[in-house]
Length: 143
Image (cartoon, rainbow, N blue to C red; front, side, top):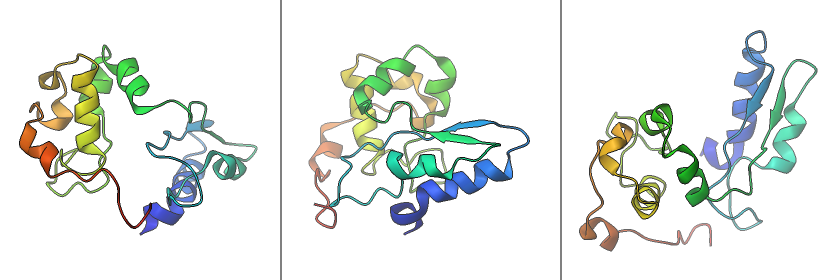
């Protein structure tokens, strides 16, 4: 629930609590379309208003698509190790690997020509056809 409505303000509150250590916070771009029919809990047009004299909050790459973000971190070891699109964390690991964020990210990694065994945050398992059969592209609650 909080992610649908308060994600941006939640991140901003953390940023201000850590204002003595950080002066600029970058919010990761949304993977979906931004519009009145999709609840993302974070909007570039709103989140920048949470900035203060001590902390600047921004979305410098909010128009960058998932594929471009995957390509940008593909050769960066910390990015591969700590990549965390999952918001469910059902398994207690960094990523569940199968939710609406994890599975498309795993597919994008493979489509970009990277080997999922180099991504320990996903357990290094390749995507199989059975996983794709169960994946819903559209969530009826937000379309």
